[in-house]
Amino acid sequence: MHTLKFTTLAAIAALALAGCSDNDNDHGPVVAPLPPVQPAPPIPQLAPAVGATLGACEALASRITYPEAVITSATSIAAGTLTIAGKPVGQHCLVTGQLARRTSPVDGQAYAIGFEMRLPQNWNGRFFYQANGGVDGSVVTATGPVGGGGPLDNALNQGFAVISSDAGHQAPTPFFGIDPQARLDYGYQAVGKLTPMAKNIIQTAYGKGPDRSYIGGCSNGGRHAMVAAARYADQYDGVLVGNPGYRLPLAALANIAGGKTYASLASTPGDLTTGFTQAERALVSNAVLGKCDALDGAADGLVQDTGACQKAFDLNRDVPTCSGARNGSCLSADQKTKIAGLFSGAKTESGATIYTSFPWDAGLATAGWASWKFGAPIDRDSGAVAFIWSVPPFDRATFNGRDFVLNANLDALLARINATSSTYPENAMSFMTPPNASNLGTLKNRGAKMMVYHGTSDPIFSSNDTTVWYEQLRAANGSDASNFARYFPVPGMNHCSGGPSTDQFDMLTPLVNWVEKGQAPDSVTASARGAGNAGGVNGDLPAGWSASRTRPLCAYPKVARYNGSGSVEDAANFSCQ
Image (cartoon, rainbow, N blue to C red):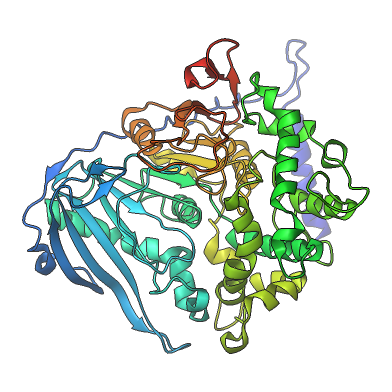
């Protein structure tokens, strides 16, 4: 051992001396130059899709063959039978069916992935996977969302072939979570199974597969799309993500923590809405506007510089503290402490942070905000946490949503969300979230593109969570991910729509133009849905706004700022800076 060590050291010394010389012109050992740093290969530009015409519709029922797929019908739908925002949708073929029928060995229930596809007569060569929301469980009409509230157009009308599914269970209730495979289908596998099947159906129908494939949705649909960007990046060229609950189990648990908190503040026992009344929420919203409205250069009822607002507004300082009874003109000291705690990030009993913070914004006083904060913990989140994400799931026979929330031990529930067992080998954070969410190299290097939007007054999935994700994505891409992914905050918008906001917009068209023409979107024009709007009126709009107000939605980190002249109702008078 000692001889080996000596011999090795001697060899190293000899090599060092070999680099020495008595020549005055020799300044030391010759060091080979480092190879030049190779620039990253350019992101490829994908070619535009090329359309085709549909053949006989009804014949597809017998012509479609795909493993484990059962086609139940193929029906021709005449032009104008289906309308969206008053627009007649063109002639198309409706194909319905199920994939992967089975009976669960755990709960004994029958399961399948139900779907419908709508195939336009005049096809544009593109496929759109419609990622639906909530706990899924229903095959809703496959039209293809373009984003925002009350949309005026849809992917089907634009010529896409569109699929919609129930994500693997046949009722919009959480009890499917007792079956381990149904959990996985809901989390990510339904998208993975349906995507190649849908492309096979398109091939059969048109004699060619789709040239370009897109996936999009809002809420849980936004989560589905984010997961697809990570897990199925080789299958999709464009990803449209709206108000994503991409850490949905943690957001639901944080909302349960909020339900417990509002119950503790309730002036009427058991009525969570009295823990933070509509008058009190309007008081806070107006205080936020008072500090933040003009930060973008215009006092117009919109907080567009959300980041600056968080530094400008202070709940303790800017909202009066009640000296007597609560009457809507103040908040009690207890309310301030507990509500501020929820906005900074709900915690378990031991002090562990559950989810993330929420921004102070102007959309707190709406009915939609109240529904998510006061109703959803009991009606939605309790069942989802108890049956879809807990290991083991709770007992369905004795489950009561209100009792579950009010008596919840948040530390114990958080542990169950992260637990596994032999029956449930994947925990909720594995099957619900995109793996390595900030590593989207496969998507990027294919030339695919991603557009994300999120309302800053979303009460259930915080836009702060999406901002943190996007910052991580930027960091993973040399501080700039804008060459393949862009994020558009929507000031004032609640969950996917509503709120005092310009919430009507089409992000699918600019996504297609970016993917297929290389036209990167710096902003997207959004409209308010005032009286007479074809997509439906937004009842949350302030009375002083123009019914047709427009604003640019700016690619983060830029913010829409008033140019200093012209009507504040017109997007043309604002610039992304």
